[in-house]
Image (cartoon, rainbow, N blue to C red; front, side):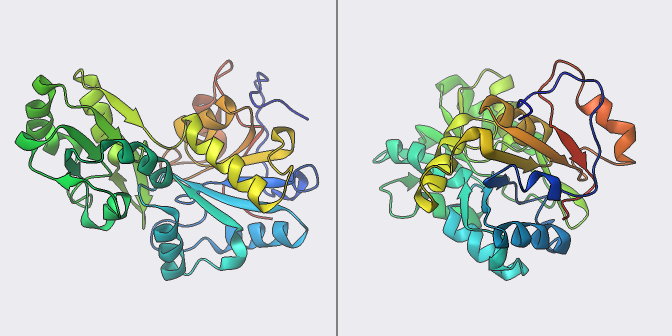
Length: 288
């Protein structure tokens, strides 16, 4: 089996994921940018996962969404992603809830939209103004359609002198939504960390979300978390590919607007220089 990080200068570009099916028992598949674009499902990707499952493979969708998995499943249903695409969903929001639980009884500044409030559901946490907060939970931007991290300079500057720790529920910097690029919680967290703030990240590329994915696989089928038989599939260089390498997994890179604006062949060498965490192959899209 090829190792999780490849040093060869030649990175194969393939049109089909099928050759990996026979040598794996489970796939850990990113959602946004691989399964859908936030608005429309990618039918070829959904069909590839469904076909792999029909052949006996397991598919766990692993997302940096700041919302718990049940909320993400509802979103997938709403977009039109078939349930035949996956066996289970694991999210950054699931991991973030374990961190947020430790803030029980404390006043918290929530940076993010109302749709992300599931991360606080059932927890004894008061959401307050910046001047009253003892910690920050960042799930995204209040209005990611129009805002950038620069819009949060004043809020973050007010929190820094007081040493407020931040939990970032989505380490992604940007994602593609319906053909447009939007900022995520990771962009705000990076700005805070860059200014000297303390940030704890949930989600890829950090190991806790992979540990949860392995636990989920074991619940589906004992022994299914054998790393030598797993494949991670994603479009994020610093999240999906680097995270898979850190977790000891092979990976396949799927091109998306996050990194690839032109032809895949033109940018793949730049994205994955020798010595960096590299996938075993790259694809223009996930397809069987």
